[in-house]
Amino acid sequence: AQSVTQPDIHITVSEGASLELRCNYSYGATPYLFWYVQSPGQGLQLLLKYFSGDTLVQGIKGFEAEFKRSQSSFNLRKPSVHWSDAAEYFCAVGTRVSWGKLQFGAGTQVVVTP
Amino acid sequence: ETGVTQSPTHLIKTRGQQVTLRCSSQSGHNTVSWYQQALGQGPQFIFQYYREEENGRGNFPPRFSGLQFPNYSSELNVNALELDDSALYLCASSFPPGQGRNTEAFFGQGTRLTVV
Image 1 (tube, rainbow over the protein chains, first blue to last red):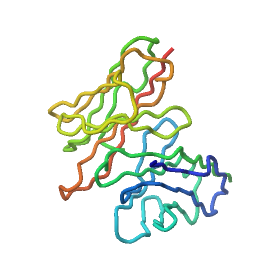
Image 2 (image 1 turned 90 degrees about the vertical axis):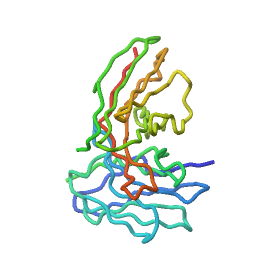
Image 3 (image 1 turned 90 degrees about the horizontal axis):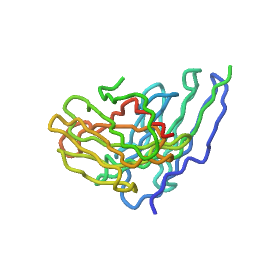
């Protein structure tokens, strides 16, 4: 069965510290992978995506993610978080055939402390 | 801010009623997908429309239906509302792959539906 797992429901990080959010997937086809961010009461904003090629992907707002096929993972990282990074983060998976029909993880809530 | 707009932003309905939510896609995007996001959960795919035809459906009952118009805008209709239908409904527009264009899905701000 296809699935997307974000093991961490909630993460608290100090401003200026590094952040890593985990995402594991189980998909039969070659996956298209995405990370989205959602601020309270807002829609989803795409941070970055991976379709093929270089497994280290750079996104907006200083985020990057690394695709590891052997581990079925696509973890999101940021070297130094800002207070404005406090939000909910969603990992999502699609495929070449079902590209617009994304399957989302349950999300990770990030809290940034001073 | 994306070019995807949804209306209304908030809506309160009574159980058993019907509701129509609207989505205007980003200029030129011919594909619209709808998602339901219950509180504290990730979005769940409802269905997708491409060139006015349904192009895939998630695990939602037939009382969830949709339309896409020639200008690519879209509607989501829900009949016989249930309390569990209370959620944020998100619309996303994009191009399909294979056309040499950016296939990123742009999401609207959503419609918050409350069923009482």
